[in-house]
Image 1: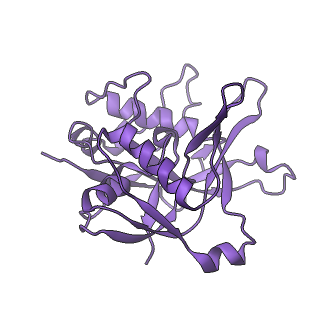
Image 2: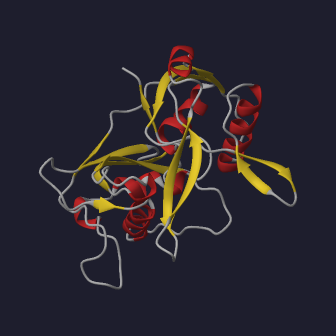
Length: 246
């Protein structure tokens, strides 16, 4: 049985119809495809799967980046959970249609090429870059609630390990070492916003996370979970998808 998988969903280069405003369309599409094969999401339980989107902004002449549209080029989805991985492994291109009440309005990726990544090679350290920002949160006080934590260092490591432990129900001992040259070259700006859904007024809801290349160290099984299922929280909303640096 497939106990871990990472799928690549690649769109043809000539395709010009896979346009999204936010990550919600992709999340809906993937959840619907997984439900066809028995996935039953649990409320208020951290998920053990994740996805990321590689896209291209196509209306950058608009002076407001929040209104940019994005052409989907690749979707990555994976899990190291032995119950969820076999479900993701069954996804085929014909399943990749977002359910919608308005015919023709849902995201359609049925023309995609779907294939699995090579098996993860066990290691205790790896160089990664972010396909999507990494999100962890910290509570400042009871009134303000939880905010995204956007710094590197020991506190980030604590929050990452706490988040991953909550997701997988076992302890993690990850350590994130930022790429110093990259951080210096961009003037210390290592966060990026991502639109996760569109509000009723038409404006996107943008949430920030960390976006930088880094080395991640930890136990073999910890890095395996990160590679397949994503790093941090909100991975089922498109955060925390990573790729290896070449």
